[in-house]
Length: 182
Image (cartoon, rainbow, N blue to C red; front, side, top):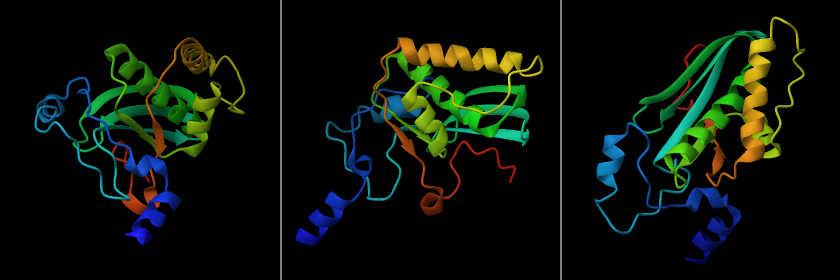
């Protein structure tokens, strides 16, 4: 209908993107679903696009012990986990989680899977190619800053095409990669 068309035009285009996915690493069920239909169906407006990798970070204190991970969004199967790092912040962890997910998908040749993050700040840092933390470099944070510099170098030297989309927590609840420590 005209009303549906106007609503779609006003909506976020990411809500309507679908592609036939390559399987995520360690994801046998996604590989099997790859052959179930030649024509993918459109997702319901306002629901996650699958398959997807969801990433999140957790920090005990700010700064404090920080860790991050990525999970397959619909099954919550953990694909990677890093940390804890001493002297980290949640924003740095969110940034590193996205970059790690990008590097993993790039290495596996997967460019048609969505990455979801619940951090608008980290998404913007990744798009700019720079972790814009105000955390001070000290001997205490040196190891973490080394990881950040390697992530920035990866972004500078690789052309990634995977969409990074903000997970709307207010609509869908906590991101599947959430550590559950609130």
